[in-house]
Length: 91
Image (cartoon, rainbow, N blue to C red; front, side, top):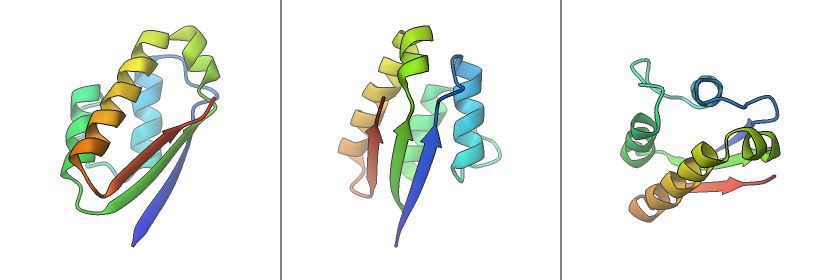
């Protein structure tokens, strides 16, 4: 069964805040490394079907556009590798 997760980034500007939010909203393992490599590993290793909707990205787009773009590219790669993963971004 598909699990849907809504991740609000309206108050997120820094890398650490992003990873804290991901850890809070997603069922990530306790040993989650709070970085993009660790997030990619979790996304591609999960056997559950996840539909992740990341919204209110405009603040992070303004404050930390490079990291947000890296997250989007990572999400695209992870979706290509995993059939049970869907990730969408909304401003």
